Length: 218
Ligand SMILES: [Zn+2]
Image (cartoon, rainbow, N blue to C red):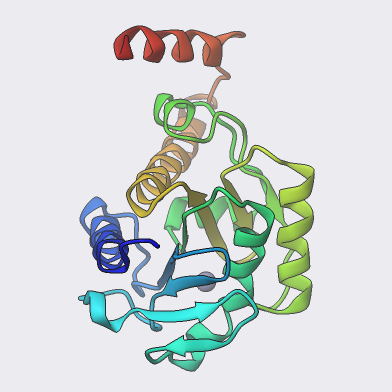
């Protein structure tokens, strides 16, 4: 059994880290979840600012509220989180934000290329694909997410067209770290347009980074 208290604390810390890192939109909107077991996950109650561990709800993958309270805004997005947990058995945490620069790519229906060191190193050494728009938490939206995850078995993030960003990883801290890496990469990509446009890594960059990480760990 997981240490539920620990997973709660880690999720709340990840939410606070998003604000500290400056990757939240003006509204402060986000939802975060962390897997407890094959059938249950913790979910933010409909807000994330000044969140406390005991305010997290427990829900089942089939959408039942098992413990705690959820605002209606959060009830809508249970299926969005469940779709990712079902598609990716090793995913331990999911974060959805409206991070402004990443959302610009989502609004433009443009995949975000992997052209920065943080994206290459911290879990997304490939472009972030775009999921076609559907109303938040709707069957259309959830099926779209599942389809892209099936087509792109190694992606750890998707852009939700005309909406925002959805990122997933082994735990809350790693997932928050990747949100930050993606948002700063999106900012750099947009800033580089003024300088003639961002440029791809040289061929073999990922292999070189993996070799460097392996050397540092040995
Ligand atoms: Zn949203």
